[in-house]
Amino acid sequence: MDDLYRDYILDHYKHPRNFGELEPHDLEAFEHNPLCGDELGVHIRVQDDRIADLRFHGHGCAISQAAASISSEELKGMELSEAGQLGADWLLELLGIPISATRRKCALLGLKAVREAVTGDDAWPV
Amino acid sequence: MPRAAEHRPQAGHGLGVRDDFPIFTREFAGKPLVYLDSSSTSQKPQVVIEAQAAHLRERNANVHRGVYELAQQADAAFEGARGRIAAFAGAAAQVTIFAKNVTEAINLVAYSWGRSNVGPGDAVLVTQMEHHANIVPWQVLCRERGASLRYLEVDEHGRLSLAQLEQELARGDVRMVAFAHVSNVLGTINPVAEIVRRAREAGAVTLVDGAQAVPQMPVDVDALGADFYAWTGHKALGPTGIGVLHGRREVLERMPPFLTGGDMIASVDFQEAIWNELPWKFEAGTPMIAEAVGLAAAVEYLDALDMSRVREHERELTEQLLEGLSQVPGVSVVGPPGTESRGGLASFTVEGIHPHDVAELVARHGVCIRAGHHCAQPLMRCLGVTATARASVGVYNEPGDVQALLDALHGAREVFSLEGTSPARVG
Image (tube, rainbow over the protein chains, first blue to last red):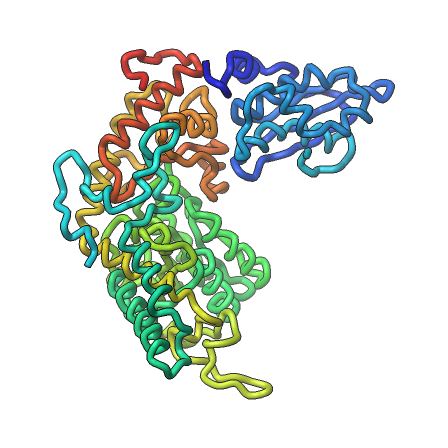
């Protein structure tokens, strides 16, 4: 069994959850990883200050795709104020695999897009 | 004396010089280092490491100003290095300018030559296969001067069209044609002398990015005839921090300096200064002295290996690489078919595995390859991909290195449970 490419990571990569466009949507953001050119965008529908629904779109490596897919299931139903404050640790713990320094941005790309859509802040999650 | 001269090539074992490179004593992931990323930067032979250290240990002083003996020795080492580096590339020392790297060399030309020769209505012609270093300085120049930036297209075999070059030149507005000698993504070897000849007939100046070419094949800058030819030390077994710009003397003499300050002046008054002569007019401040000495040792080492043999060696490895990649299910290689007009590299994609994951998975076997856009995003768009994996060879590689990559690729496909994985080949 590979430490990084575990079965559930590859499953989320090959069959990403909550991927595609969401029309209409209330919030959106589009992010890219300058290192590798990977791109991930997010559409969010808001109801009662919560993420009622969201979809990711774009393309990237197994790590960025799986991280977006896995986090999408947690993000649905979350209060916007909570989603806007999510940090890197939240996502890395959720992902559950050892991430090297060079792959960190791959893992965080989707969360960066969500945070920008919700708060307008396009800084990398720390 | 470079140790390479003691080595003779062995059939099937590359050039037999791996022991000259101390880094290959290291292991990664419990396996010997398999370095297939020489297009990014080359490894360094002991003679280069020692030449640089010996200079710092025994001959260190600033250049061009001391009268004491140590300073004279430093001068001799620095200007002697310039002479050897110039001769290696077939250029005169007087028109061989040191810069930080190819990026700075191209910026030198774009600022110094460009700001005095390109104006509104003029055009700069580059190609779709350029590294960002040979795109962005021209974008900035053209925007600033109201000129247009146009691109020669790359065909499905990764080649430029001389017919399109003729059409572009016939428009009569092209002042500069800037292009790579060897593409860092496609591997394409461009017909430099032919492009230079046609550009000159049309009254355009030429700049060749030789970053990938000089380390892997014989290059005679004078014979190629370009107005500017740039290359970098660290890809040619030398240190980082030193690049080389060769120019045609009559063009360089008409150009104003790029960076100004110390060392590049003949005399300075309170309000004005008189520029130094070539090549120092373009070298402001204390130059990269130890790095020049290191690069001189590198080109001596390459000379002893013989660049024709280096090219033949890398061509054989690239044949093996292309043949092996064609046997891996789902692999597509970009660039010219065969090795006639291809340098020592292959960029490829693996269906179902992102290039980043390919690089990560082969690294588990100690194999170093590059993944990403290779600083050539416009080309990536033309190819319809966001990234590729790239394997590139150097003088120290052996057939076993290529085989290690191929085995690791079969293994990577198995990790991703892709169809057509052949268990017998999994490494």
